[in-house]
Length: 379
Ligand code: GDD
Ligand code: MN
Image 1: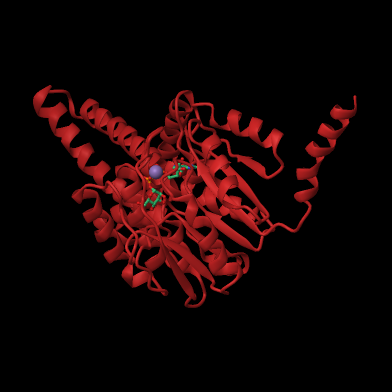
Image 2: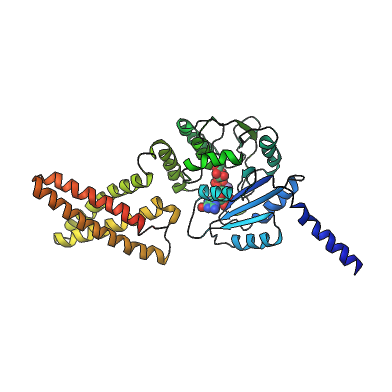
């Protein structure tokens, strides 16, 4: 009985310890990292002795059991929290959501896959908490840092991405592509209204969105190899990087999603013509049938590409992919009615066939963009 009581007492001690003011919150975005999250928390716990920390996982409804594992972990330890997002994807938006969910004065952003060196956490924290910097960046490109086992091609891509980012960076950084950094809470809040939260590069987004040049410290680290699970970096992530840059440059005037939608629409016109030609000359179909086939193919093409690229952050999958396609057909059908209607009106009043054609097409396209954003890809 007695020893059990002592054991109970010892067990309650860490709970008291968490009542000290929170000093550091580590925000970790996860998608399919079930084999890494347990080890990550153990490592964090080992290196952050004497600092009051919490870790906030932001999981986008992983399919490998990550959120179930995180729920369990959070049940057993108050320092672990989970934000579970359903129907949304995106590293940058996950990070911002996690960061805004904490009251901690210092926030670190870190990957779950153990590629970021956790022994750099104390110097990142100290740079903000003790040395008064706004931002502390784990850098692979400053003295003492390294990209580890990366091959030449990946180093080249990373360096190229760094170079094209220069025009939007108010604060020069040796490694703006880094996903490992610490920031003071008020600095993040000041930048928050301007954040694009597109794609992967939340650090770059942050320095481009901050209303002033930031006081930065760089902490070198070596990027480790991933041993468990796989990277989510793919061609679409590269495209999202372009979107982020574009949004920072001209997003104030034109929404980037509108530009993407328009570019894909232009490609759709080419698909339409190719299919029309093929059906007419290859299969010798009557014009109306060939034109009909081309319209359906082009609409499907537009839908699939916009779903995969423009609306990647709320991509429709499985059965929802099909119902989305049907709703897109409906939107486009109404757009075509508007197109013909407006075109006819303009033609009646002005008698310019090409002006009327363009007016109809513009109205139809804008309708398709607005209505599909609201109807097909509603949040
Ligand atoms: N919530 C959420 N949603 N998390 C995501 C998503 C998503 O859509 N996509 C990726 N993650 C999580 C991963 O689970 C991992 O913890 C972290 O974000 C980084 O993803 P990786 O797929 O491992 O990316 P990487 O290693 O190729 O890229 C990393 O290194 C780059 C530096 O080269 C990231 O840290 C980049 O931000 C960094 O720029
Ligand atoms: Mn990784």
